[in-house]
Image (cartoon, rainbow, N blue to C red; front, side, top):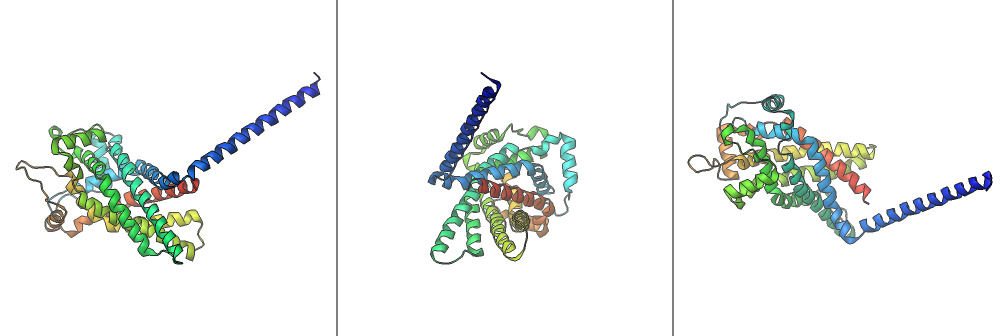
Length: 333
């Protein structure tokens, strides 16, 4: 075989290989698109994207959440108790253990996101889709009221489902505040859930469910409704790029989510952390009792203690969650 013929054979083989690879890629893409556009996949994607985005955000924000919980539990029962700064709390956690202690309860946080954020973003997108389709059929456009309704509903349902994981997270994060002899030293979220159910009963896994649900409704009202509304207004009234609109809308949503939900988050933390004293009684009988006692003993402003830390925890979490969810939604169109 001549040199020219050999070169032609090699070139022909290379071209055929390229054609086969490109055809395989096209077939793979077509198959992925076919799967993504089945009715089941279209219904499941908002839930899957929501869960993944929440888990990514929690991994980034977990140390801030740990500091937030410790601040809320400081000075319980007294109006003039300690007022630790976020830096002081973080320094104390690291000094008494190691840097990774800031990630205490991460497994519970990830489980919570896998359940809670999967449900709340999935239900929100599903409800919004139904409301949008109904409005379109009626020749109308959905407004802030519909977005608020979708956010409140999705938040309440998701919070009830995710309460056990949320409870385990609070217990794991507050365990280090107890005397050494009283610590549970939970190994993981599964260990925490099993231990709580065994020692306190399965019903205890829904302790603090009422403020958790109200907090979630308030947070989602602030986060999802204001995010959706802010994006509409920014698109209509500014020349910002799509990415800048998403960033700005998520920052706005984070502020309103923090403002509306912090008092309920505070009460939720207190109720989920509490355990029976020597007299066999719990410090608080329920959400209303906790609100009343804290307001009377510690002052109304105590409910907003750590607002800056809470905002730093909520706003970036909202931004990461919503940006990742937006990106995943674009990828899976």
